Length: 102
Ligand SMILES: [Zn+2]
Picture (spheres, rainbow, N blue to C red):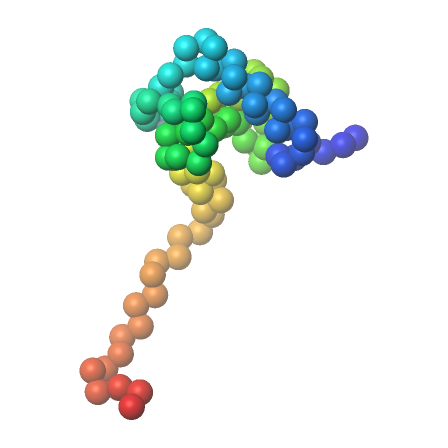
């Protein structure tokens, strides 16, 4: 059994196919935030990205039925949310005003 991970050539092809199909279908807005998707440019906040409806971590697969095209911002935000397991509040170390290093 080969584990299917993102980053493989097969995934790249599928991802490209999903984006091309979404564009051909006239899928012009992000289903999550409603922003207009820019199919002409990559790497922009509203560039198309392929999102797993059910993430790999929960048994989702790289099949078109489990994929949708969202904007890059939403794809990154959702991924970050998945990875964030514990909240680490910014550690504010109280320093007395007299504790200057020099
Ligand atoms: Zn979005």
